[in-house]
Structure formats: structure tokens, C-alpha cells
Length: 142
Image (tube, rainbow, N blue to C red; front, top):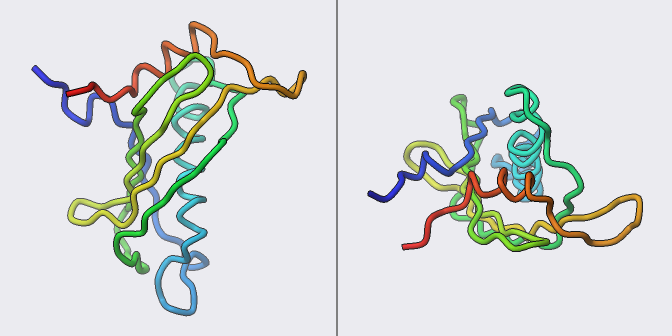
């Protein structure tokens, strides 16, 4: 039996803030990248801490891609970022995202995340514990 998307997707809910709306009366495109960052911080830092687990540290974004699918206006209900891993390697992984509500997808995005040692200022490999955490969100291949 194939797992459902809920089995491997991280869900981060938020409300559009007044300051996110631009002069065109929709969420400014750069705010979408902020939503992705907030979702990653919840996924890899805040959620593990709330669960009594160690957060995953020492990662940097190497690349972002985003496709805007429809305007997001100042809605009063929660919007969510659904995030999952599409590929995991020894020193990097790819994240996919949907910024959406129950009816619409407002944007899709992808990020390449690499393991980084800030003290040595160089790339590194993920530890076994980090790879295990990342694997929780790995989308199964068809």
C-alpha cells in the first residue's frame, strides 16, 4: 500500500499578514520565500524541539526555484506550506513545497539543501541521525 501524502509531508500553517500585501492587493512574490523559510525552520528546528528531539542544524540553501500559480490575497483563513523531500544524498537533499489551501495551490517550489560546517566554512556530509530525520519526509518513488 502506498503511503498517503500526509505520511511524509510536513505541514506548516500560517495566516497572511497585512504587511505581506503589496500595492496590487496580493501577497508580494518575495514574501513567498519567507513562507518557505518559516516552514523549513518549523520542520527542522521548532517541531523537533517541541517533540524533545534534537533539531537539525548545519544546513544551507544552495538553490531555490519557485513557480507562482495564482495570486494569493489577504484571505482570513489559514494557508499552509506542505514540504517533503524528493531526493536525499550524503551531503544534500531536495525539498519540494506547495503553498496552498484546501482548494488552490498558490505556488510550488523546490530547494536544494546542503550540509554545511560553519566552523570550517565548508560543505560536509549529513550524519546518520540527520539522514534518518530527513528520511521521514522522503516521498516514496512510484
